[in-house]
Length: 231
Ligand code: SF4
Ligand code: SF4
Image (cartoon, rainbow, N blue to C red):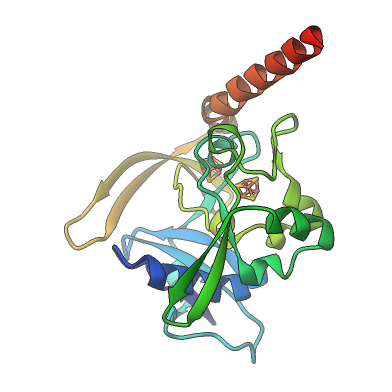
């Protein structure tokens, strides 16, 4: 079995380091395989498979044998949930990612509020994307329930959005699972329990999670109608 590169875990109360690590991960995002939960390591693993010869910053990545994924659950982000995009999204994008965007999307980002974070690897510009009503991301299409950046290619989405750490939905060996329990242990590791579900139960959960987005859409639609009536 081969090797994979896993992003080291974020450091507690060290935002500068974590932004630095995210920037390094963003450079490799086209090689992101996915985020897994390893019951053996009791830990989430953001797994990258860069082509041989690609420079990997070992300060923020560690190498692991692929066998670590044998019993791991893959984190899923099913279409229709949208919880991370619609309210209090906290979404942001890093300068290195903005440079990868097509002109049209880049010019939208460059009009957003930004801050410069001084990291151990130099200055990183961080652009806020959560500037619409109630923290909605500027790239979230409320009507269709999708990320507008996906039209340019999945890996042009911000690295924070690609790293699916929400852990609600998972898959393993073509089977579907939902989280049934979560506990943070004293040493910082996490114990996540999953139960296998059928498609119907899975869709029901997507529907439940997506209720926030649908309510938001309803309010937005009624506001639009109201604005048209008063015109
Ligand atoms: S809560 Fe989970 S499934 Fe829903 S949008 Fe966020 S990452 Fe995806
Ligand atoms: S960039 Fe896309 S995936 Fe990320 S929060 Fe915005 S709409 Fe959601």
